[in-house]
Amino acid sequence: MRDLRARRELARLVRTLRPDVLHVQSAKAGVLGRGLLRPPRGVTIFTCHHASFGPGRKWSHRLIGRPVEQLSLPLLDGVISDGARDMPMLRKLAPRTPIHLVRNAVPPVLPEWDDADPPPHVAVWVARMAHPKDPLQAVRSWRHVVAAVPDARLVMCGTGPLADDVRREIDRSPVKASIDYRGRVPDVAAVLAEGSVFLLATQVEGGCTMATLEAMSVGLVPVISDAGDAFLYTHSGAGEVVARNSPRTLAAAVVGLFTDHDRLRTMRRRAARFSREDWTVDDMVDATVAVYRSVLEGADCATVD
Image 1: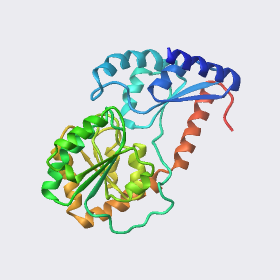
Image 2: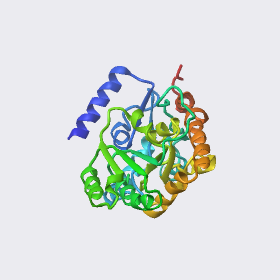
Image 3: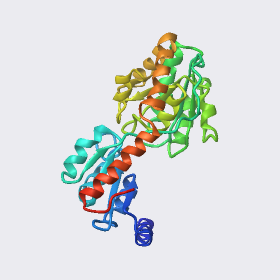
Image 4: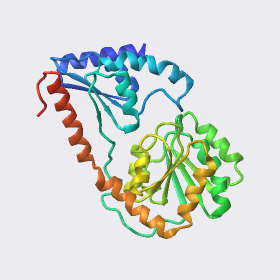
C-alpha cells in the first residue's frame, strides 16, 4: 500500500512540475516511477545501482527481481548503470533501451589531503550492516590479521539488520579487544582519519561505492571483495581486490599492506588520485547531463539546457 501511495504522489509531481526528465534511482524507485513520463512529454531514466537479482542475492530477490526487471526495464527511455559488470545483463533484458555507463563519484571528504605517513595498522569499515554487505566475514577475518600483526585494529561503523549479529560475532571472537564497533557515527571524516585501509566484504554490491570513494579521497587503500567494478582498483594499483567468501584471503590482503610500509604509501597516493582526480563529481554530472540530452533527442523531445 505504501508503494501504491508513493507512485500516486510521484505521478502528481510529474503532472505538476512537467519535467523533461524523470530520473529514478534504486530498484524500488525505478519500478515505482516507470511509465509515469513518456515521450513526447519527456523521458524516464533509471540508474541501476547493481542488479537486484543474480548470484549473491537473497533467494527472494532472485525469484522476484528478474521477472520484475524483465517487465519494467523495456518501459524506460534510458538506463544508466554505475558499473560495467551489469551492462550485459541490462542489454539482454532491455535490448531496445539505450544503456549508458556513468561511474559514481563523490566530493572529497576533506578539501585537502595530507600525504603523511598512514596511521599504523588500523582498518576501517563504513557500510550498512545489511545484505549483500558481509560484515560478519570482516569480523571473522580479523583474527587472522591479528595473528600476523598483533597491534592491528578494526574500526566498524554502520547500522542495519545485521547489527546485533555483528555484535555477537565480535563477542565470540578471540580478538574482540582489537575490534571497535561504533554503530552510527556523526563524523565519518574523523573515523577515516584513524585508518590506512578501508575494508569491505560483500556478496554483490561493491567496487566504486560512495563510502569506498570517500575513504579513498583521504588516502585509505580499499581491501574489497571482487564485486561490482572493484577490478578498477586493481588496474590502477589503488587497492586490493580479493575473492568473495574467504576471510583468510581478505585478511592476507590487509596483512600484506600493514607489513609493507612503502607499498602502502604508494597505494595511498594512487587511491587518493583515483577518487579526487581520475573521475570527479564534475565528470559524473557532465556525463549524466550528456545522457539526458542523448535520450531526449533520441525520443524526439526538447533538449536540456
